[in-house]
Amino acid sequence: MAVTSGVSFALSAIITVLLFSGMQMYKNWLSSTQLHTVFGGYIGSLVFIFSLTALGNLETIMFGKSFQMKLFPEVFISLITSLIASGLVHRVSTTTCFLFSIVALYYINRISQQTYSTAAPTVPVHTKKKK
Image (cartoon, rainbow, N blue to C red; front, side, top):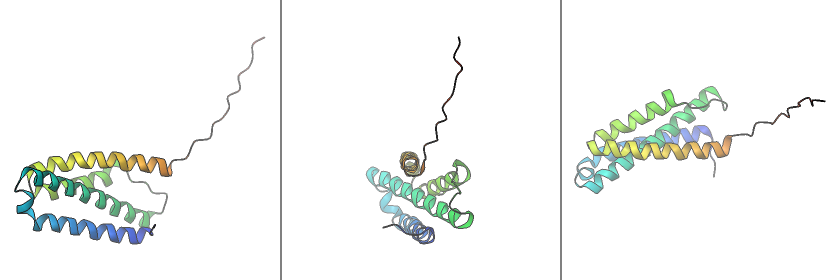
């Protein structure tokens, strides 16, 4: 079920805050074993996805539907925020957060291209025939 940009912004912002605070509350558990540390990086990548969604929806509300997110500053700000959140848990969580976030960004871009791209009209080129 699709929601408006305003509702999506609110939901994404709330989920981002909940994930960040959950990472801080369970910091000791997330840094207790190697598997938990990798899981902390995965949660950090979720912070990236939801903060990127919130930022994109905020810009859609402010600038209109035709505004597009770019690598800098939107993706960069969301990535740095998620890396800092993961870095507060464990150093290895930062690395795994970066890797998971890059993979997630690839798939987000791929889905966006499939959904929103339009085929450019082809213009026939007429050449003169030589006699």
